Image 1 (cartoon, rainbow, N blue to C red):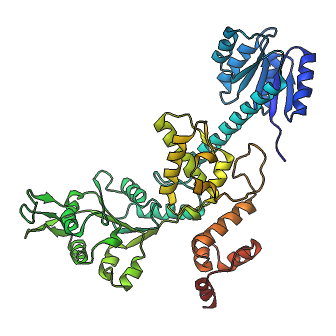
Image 2 (image 1 turned 30 degrees about the horizontal axis):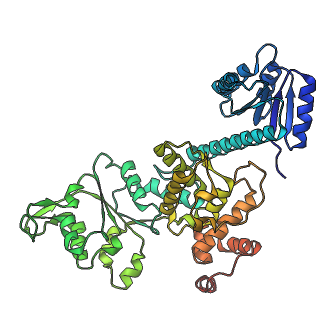
Image 3 (image 1 turned 120 degrees about the vertical axis):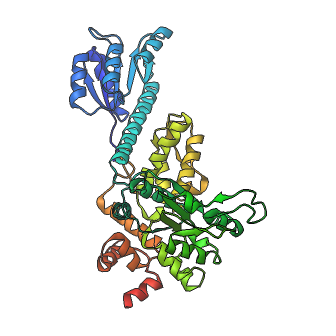
Length: 466
């Protein structure tokens, strides 16, 4: 059942106050009357109000003065002013006092209702944005990483233990999950934060140039080598070298990289001298390197060199309502960057974001919100601002009262959504899902049966028979 918007009606004429209260109550508002400004101010201290509706002409402090005080004390609370004057000066005075809107007398009830509904919507939007912003500030995170889902809390715990280590780190996860963000966070939190952070994408550089890029070359070592070049291993000395997409490293280059990591020296292309380096190596891939080793696409000795510590980033679809925290984070970022007063998400937009599986992970969500902020003409991102394929995946959710936070549901419902999402994300493999969720498989099986989940994959079934 929807919660009736609560209006504080301020008018020193008892008959007018009673009439308006009756009319607005029939239109679905809960009206709290106040026959004086002093009574109104007292009620504002003790009562949860969503909109102040005040007459402009009253004894003592008038409506404009009340408006100015409310705006000063409670800037998030919209004020609608009633006035018998249609003069421009009156409208200007109301706006200068900070009024959200004003309605002239004699009152057209349709106009007044529309003004109050817009004001309520604005107040509830502000409340939702404030709630999400507080959640962003209070969310357990690591450096610039955003999210507070159980799977991300596990990642943060591991990152906290790894940050001070000099051991090589391999970050795995699907494309777009934020592997370079994690690498930069480890660098900033680590003992080498004062040194350089040097990143290279192994898949983006042709094989003929990658060796020179990593190890350097002498002048004349090959065609177009008009000057000597220092390689990235040496450039990153004293800091961190991040090799992204290391699974795409050419097989012919892998022995030289293995030796470099073992001896901590590099030899430039065309050179004879070995140059020492001192880097903390972090690598990343979206591939299964163990499978690549088994298929002889990746050297086993190199794998053990780069994967001393492994960190697996979960896909966005397994992170529950982190989607909304991340979306709010991006709304604020791009709103500020573009100068737009975009504050948050509409309820329907939030439902669309929660229902979409995000195959491109955080990077896809970021691009989606950047587009939405660019397109929206309102203070909130609406479903119509989202791409069609995101809108089409909206899932039915439990009915919520108007204006309530989009994720304000029972703990049972939150548990159900998250477990089913993780179960689907790991291909319905109960063993893997139980590991990610941090519960035993018997508990997971019981929950899946209660939630009416689809059957486990054959791979998961084989795991159970073992």
